[in-house]
Structure formats: C-alpha cells, structure tokens
Image (cartoon, rainbow, N blue to C red; front, side):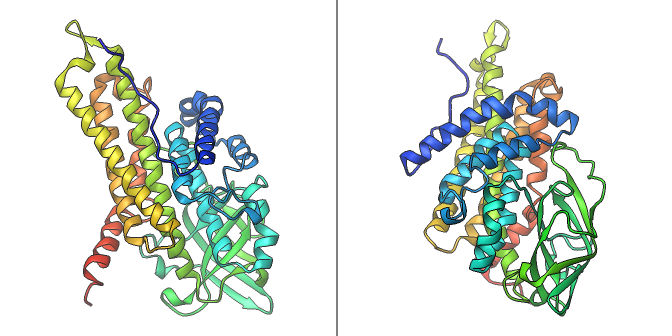
Amino acid sequence: MTDHGPQPVDRQLPTEEARDLISLVREMVQREIEPNASSEEDAGHFPREVFALLSASGLLALPYAEEFGGGDQPYEVYLQVLEELAAARLTVGLGVSVHTLACHALAGYGTKEQRAEHLPAMLGGGLLGAYCLSEPASGSDAASLRTRATRQGDTWTLEGTKAWITHGGVADFYTVLARTGGEGAHGITAFLVPGDAPGLSAAAPERKMGMKGSPTAQIHFDGVQVPDARRIGEEGQGFAIALSALDSGRLGIAACAIGVAQAALDESLSYVAERRQFGRPLADFQGLRFMLADMATQIEAGRALYLTAARLRDAGLPFSKQAAMAKLFCTDAAMKVTTDAVQLLGGYGYTVDFPVERYMREAKVLQIVEGTNQIQRMVVARHLAGPESR
C-alpha cells in the first residue's frame, strides 16, 4: 500500500529568492507558530512576540518598496507567504494582512516626507498596525461613517467610534477614515493616528466564536488631536484610498482562507491514513476519497484565482473584479472544506483534540471581514452589468 498523507504545497514562484523565502517561512512556522497555535488560541493569547519576530525578519514589509524598508516582493509571492502563515495560525496570517492593509494608505498616498518619516518603523521597526473604517452603524455601508475630524489651524480633532477593529487596543498605529466634509463618500479623509494618542481608547475585546487570540475591539476617539502632517492624501480623498486598500486586502483574506482550507485538508489526509475501520484504512473508502478530491479541487481553484488577481495587480492592471471574486470564492471554499473536514473526522472532528473544529470556526469569519461575501457579489455584478438603477 502506498504512503498516504499530506504533501507540501508545490508552489508556482517567480524567482529563486521567492522559493528561499517560502522555505524560510515554513521553517519559522514549524518552529515558532505551529507548536503553540491551538493552546494559545484556546487561551485567547495574542502572539505579539511572533509579530515582533516577523517584523525583524522583514515579513511585515514584503509588498512594499525596499527604499522604506520593504521587501519589494510582488503580491504573487506575498500572498503565498500569507497562506503559509494562515495555515499555521489564522491569527498570525490575518494579522499580517491587516498590518499590510494599515500601511497601504501611507505607502500609496503619503508624501515622500511622510513615507520617509513613518514607513521604516511601520514596516520593520516592530510596530503593528490596525485599520479603522467600520463603525457600529456603518459596516458594509462604509460611506456613511460618522466619526468626524474637525480642523483648527494645523491640528485635527477626532471624535467618534470605530468598530470591529482587528488589533484594537494592541496596535501601535491606526489608519483612520473620518468625515471632514459633507455626507457621502466625498467627505472622508484618511489619518495616521498613533496608538498612544491622548483620548484614544479601546473597548473590551469582542467575544468571538473563532480567532480568540486576535483582539477585535471598538476604538473610541474622544478629542484625539492629530497634526495635519499626519493627514494622508488630500481632504476628501479618504474613501478612494480606503477602496484601493480593500481591493488588495481582499486578496489577503483570500490567501488566508486557502491557508486554513489547506490545513484542514492536511489534517484530514493524516487522519484517514492512520485510522482504520472494518479492517481497512479510511483512505481506502471511496466515499472519503471523493470528499478529499473535492476538498483539494476547491483549494487548487481558489489558489489559482487569487494568484491570477495578484498577477494582474503586479502588472499594474485593473484587478478589483478579480479580487472580489477571489475573496468570495476562497472564503466560501474554506467554509466548505473545513466543514467537510469536521464531517470526515466524525466525532473526533467535533472535539478540541483535533484542530479541524477550530479551522471551521475560523473559516466563518473570513466570509464576513473586509466586505461580506454578499458585498463581493455586488462588486462582481457591477463590473459585469454596471451599477444598479436607482
């Protein structure tokens, strides 16, 4: 009988440097992340020490320019690193994606002076970022946000509350979208706010069904003063900046989803290789073999879809539609694959002795964050059929 069980993902990587990078990440994952992933998630422990290590290793800076301390890696490579991290622990993979999202506004729209002053520390100085767009009353309808920034001279005063903020309360900096003008998308401006700014506070973290090691909290701005030198882009440009960041962020979520799904498949393969029923390995039963085949096909299709979108981005071509498709497909696939993994392991799959129940709980949130999958369908449909008539 042939040897069953998971095999390392055979990745399509553009350079030898990228292959070395993936090898480095796999070694780090096996040494620093995987051994404690389940126990730390159960305990709700946020692995700040892991993020410090990732920062020191350059892994929080991969898609950004080398002149500011970035890794100068294409998204095609960066996303596959995210997948490896998320497969080990979603709290880490998603955390890197959120940090990258938080750096996007300054890297893409900041002045040369702003980038030189702040980006090196944000990318490789041990800092961790958060992204503040959603609010208690405006999640999917982000253009109706109410947090307001009022200008007096060269200082802005922020008032309001942001919600569902990953790294809320532990981040060193927050990229904040606030209203500086009238209603709608054109009255919003972006700011870079220090995590220790007077008047900034975090509520108690949300109690979530998964990702318990990643703090998600409301952030309150009570007269937080921000110098105009920390305004990113032009006044009123904030919503456009936010949308451009979300296109890239959705690819990060897609990659994380495939990482979680791959972890669930790997666990399933190990289980059926070791477990015997009716005198035969589970791997010999056709019904289970077909489940595994479907799981693997969903994963390969999702990986191909997010890499196609990444390559468009790397080539400077429009990729918004493909990013929405990738986020939609990959996260739905992760939910299906992890649910099947629990079913395949039977009663053991429903216990905390095996990680597939954790993967299933974690997969659910990926269908919600950075634009629910219903919103992704709306985005794709607008690209296909134009905006809805009013």
